[in-house]
Length: 138
Image 1 (cartoon, rainbow, N blue to C red):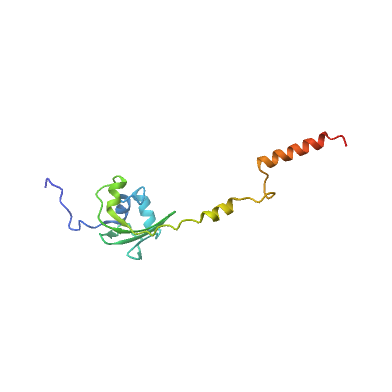
Image 2: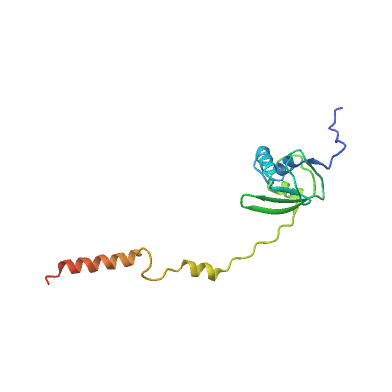
């Protein structure tokens, strides 16, 4: 038995291990906590066991923290490698984000004059006005 033999289910892998190898979680224990909290769905069914086996063709719905992704498993991983290697394990079906309307963001950023705290320019003008009125001999 000098060579590494492939198990009978070579295309199947534990879900927590696959998430770690595909770089969807920083560690296997974090991947296990994602799974146990019910944030991972396999083929539409919520999975709460880290030992659940995934195979090529399975659809994963991942919604953790600020990441919502839809992935199709392409292969089982052998190790946690660089991003380019991990990217080969799945096909990303996540719809593209809608671009935010820039005009709306600019409208929110504009402050109406006289509302809120004074700007530096307004504060200096106010200081000049006060100091001038203090020096007036009226």
